[in-house]
Image (cartoon, rainbow, N blue to C red; front, side):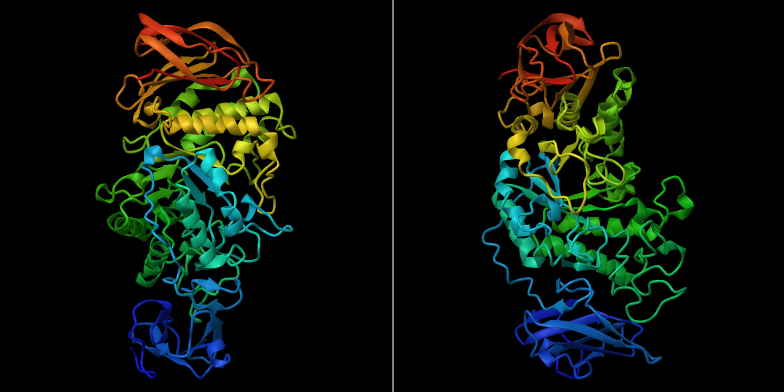
Length: 604
């Protein structure tokens, strides 16, 4: 270990707990002197210096420091200024403008946690905001522990992955999380680092993976000690962690990290590895990767591309794939770019999947449109067909996400009939959209409360209304049934996890869409999905089928078990007979209710 008057010999950044105290290391290349102070030295700012490592880093070992102590750095510059800073690598803070807290990342008891995330085509994701998912207090935000109380609910719903909106420390108590002040510290109001670990452990015990949302396209922009961290900056910009020219500009402030600086690249890489190593997360979703790739987030202006931003994603994703091959890496690349999910060897960024704007906008638009005449089936068919790099599971598909249900937009049932989400039209067409999400090829995702017909729009101070579990239990059951079919729980719908899709009927007159999904074809595998996208009932309607024999109705979204006022148009099992129809070798007659999805398959 290091002597008291020398740099630390302990590896790692920030406050590193070891057998002989705590090692502190910080990057401050423009500092003249750096000190650490805290509860371990009665906050004396000048009695515990860090020593220069002659490479921009400063470090020292402090034997009397211990886990739980609060601390800060004081940075002195050659022109006489000094700054009090929270450790950029602090795993825990008192709050976004408070102090760092010495934390031992190895102390948590994970038990025998050896969870394995499902394969991409066998995932159903539930997007969650910790602050609003379950609030069991007196108006404060929800916490990791309160969310754990509803883990059995999610298990019963059938989802097998939670995508958690960002949990890095942010200003105040309420936020979406996309304004990280301290990227390495887990939000204190939610329960801090141990709270998040309890959450991940509980999810794994319930058979549910955890995917964490991370924000590297910008930091802050407020309550941010990273800003001009060691006093240096150019053009009155952000200093060592940020670009100091026009490349700093983002829609959220002039706080784009400098992807060309080795130390900043390492900082972001270390943050990714922290979540995977220390928190046992099963994947990451990178926010707004278009703004890492391009100054304006614009695919159409390559002159503004940030080459080092692209190489940063490649570098990190390569290491993740090597060290954590099961982890899923998702990009919010809007507008979409097929290269974001190509392998790095082919010039891609190396993500497994991307949020698919080419699905959500056409499908959401189709179910929200009030006039059946203007419902565009070609656009819906195109949304079903879209794939990236010839892999149908390189995309995440949805009709609701945190972006789609806020910022001037609302929940799908609210968009269908504002102020009347429990209307017949809102229930019928929102569940029609959900059925398309859960039967189309891609990784399906629902947003918290979607399964409860949550009203209005997403807001970080508007918690889910859990009384809706009883009020909307039938709609909840519809989602459970769809998810079970999507995951082939009964082993009769394996095709819904397959790569293959054939849209064999796009009927503009009847407003009906029908498609065949399969992995290898045959009984128990091939699935036929029929969507009636108009307010009409079709009886004795002939469509094609891929094989002769009995096709059993596995799902009918018009059944009165899902609502007493649904028309309950009987969908009998179909006996398909030989005869070319819709380009398929067989045909059969179906009955289908208004705004309804039917799912058929054959027994083994």
